[in-house]
Structure formats: C-alpha cells, structure tokens
Length: 212
Image (cartoon, rainbow, N blue to C red; front, side, top):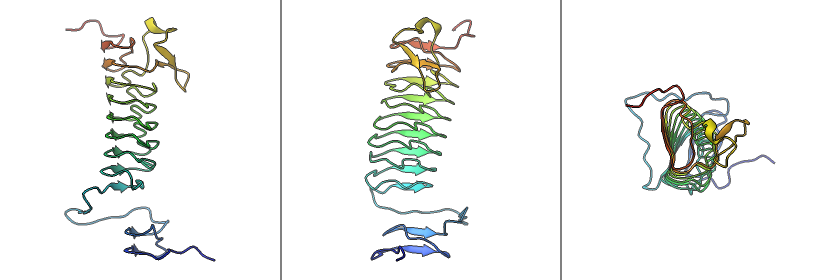
C-alpha cells in the first residue's frame, strides 16, 4: 500500500530516504536536506541539444532551451528559450517565449508575453505584454499589459504624471496606486520617471530641473 517508483529506469538516488523523481533523473539527499555542496574547480552538467537546466525549480519538458534558477522559476512554462533567475521569477509563465528575467518576482505574472527583458527586484512583476525592457528595482512593476516599453531606473514607470490622472492613460494597480494603463511605446529613463502616456519619452523625474 506504499507509493514506490513504477518500473524505474536510469535513476540515481543517493542518501537515506532519497525519493524518486522519475526516470532519467539524479537525486542527492532527502526532503530534510538543506544544502548540497560540490567541491572542485567546476561543475559540468551535460545534456542534449534541446535540454533545459533548472535549480530549485522543475521545468516542464516542453520548455526546451530554457534555464531556471530559483523556487518556482518557470515552474509552469511550456514556452521555449526562457531564462529565469530568482525566487518566483516568471513563476506564472506558460506559453511565453524568449524572455529573460533576473531578480525576485521579476516578470512574475507574465503568462504569454514574449521577448521581454527584466532585471531587478519585482521588475515587470505584473506584466503580461511583449517586447519590453525594464532595468531597476520595481521598474514598470505594477502596470499590466506593457508593450514595446523601455524603463531604466529605480521605479521607472511605476507611477504616472498628474497630467494624465483621470484619463484612459492611467489606472489603479492591485495596490490601489496610480499606474500606467496598458502602456505602449513608452520610454522612461531615470529613478521615479513618471509615465506621460503612450508614444512618449520621459527623461528624469519631477525633481529634474534641466536636460542637457
């Protein structure tokens, strides 16, 4: 009446109470193991041409050419050629492809968005759109359907300028804060650079006195 591997093939299990993870896998340690230490000058992990690599997360087999490092990173992904580094990074991604995300909860809610690059804590956290590049803590963090946007700097694009409050260019985030509404083709450069609406470029913040 106990659960055991069914016809196990090509499995390596090392350690007391090491549990099977299925065929063609290696398990070192048990559920109480907190850390694995590997000594030497390097670690070589060979794989097939279409192989994926994951640490702290298990990538679905469909997500070929992908890399995930961190708890739940790419845990639901079927899209290909994604790279996610950080806890919960791209955790909700399903069919999205060719994305790169680095940082805690970076691109967390991205499901089907493609060709995004996010670097920083919670950067592009709520984003579901495509073709964005955001660099900096919480850059474009709480706007949802971003497309063709660039945000560089601490909280760049996190909020909106007072001139677009009450218009279709602004909305409320899940935190009830003012954020860009489905921003498209926006470039925001500088810490706390505020959105001025679609098809605009913003350099600096409300403290900036002159652009040279």
